[in-house]
Amino acid sequence: MQRVSITQEMRQRAAAESDRRNAHIRHHFEVSHLTGQERDQLGFVGEFACSTFLGMEWKDNIREDYLTVDDYDFIFNGHRIDVKTETVPYTYAMSILQGKIKDDGLYGRRLIHQGQFNLLYKYDKVIFGLCIRNQMDYWYPIGYMDTTDIINDFPPTSQRPDGGKYPFPGSPVPTSMLKPLDELFSKE
Image (cartoon, rainbow, N blue to C red; front, side, top):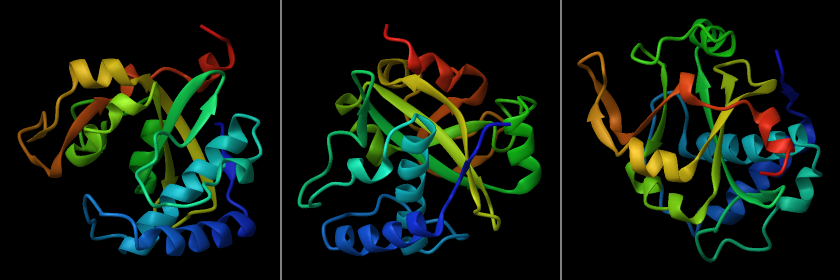
């Protein structure tokens, strides 16, 4: 199982960047298991860990300021990349990472908030990763998808495939359709 250690330096820098950005950001959603600050820090930690996974120096991708919405998190192999990181309870995380999660079941889809969906045209690819909830020592890559596929095939909805409702309207990307990150290392 591939993973990246989340270092103390990454955590500290994520907290600092979250504080710097906070005055300039409009949050799209809230979740009950993370505060707004923890959610912001998770996003930065995910970007840092993903950069590390791809063999990049994570500090090189930190923005100078946050006065405007970014056009991407970083560029890798000529692709504008956005990283989405979530926390998932242990049992579901193991099912996702072992490729056993059912797309139409609980935690089977990677959800992009409808407010963020409108920004997808700025990116070429979205990389999805997770941290195990309450054990945030590692970032685990799940996979990636081209943003044109997300835009064309997975418009935001509130309805889950099992008949329930998502906590917020979003683009429900099936986990089984994600491509392995190893494919990003070769130029298309």
